[in-house]
Amino acid sequence: MTKGADQEFLEFLVKALVDHPDDVKVDRKVDEMGVLLSLRVNSLDMGQVVGRQGATAKAIRSLLRIVGIKNNARVNLKIEEPEGSTRPARRPMGEPVTQEREEF
Image 1 (cartoon, rainbow, N blue to C red):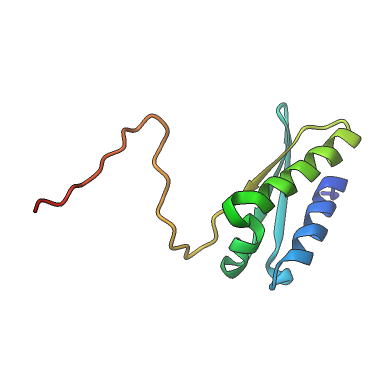
Image 2 (spheres, rainbow, N blue to C red):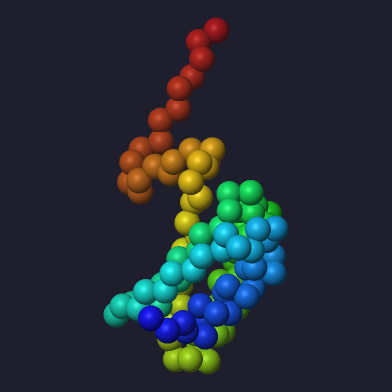
């Protein structure tokens, strides 16, 4: 499978940001919704890719949108959770939030 301009751009950009560029992997899938780029990085680099309050990830998505417009494609980015992550799993949409309260 040949690499698209969007995939090459994302790899170049993320490898310049992270401390472990050899661990950067980008998968590209095309369907009727457009192009989906799935990004995997070393778990130690996750914070650098996401940034404070997601600012870096948002900027990367904006740049990918521009690359997609140049190539007449809708480009979406999925940042995959690395193996061994300590972040709790997200609850499915529609599931009620339950909070346990301590009794005093």
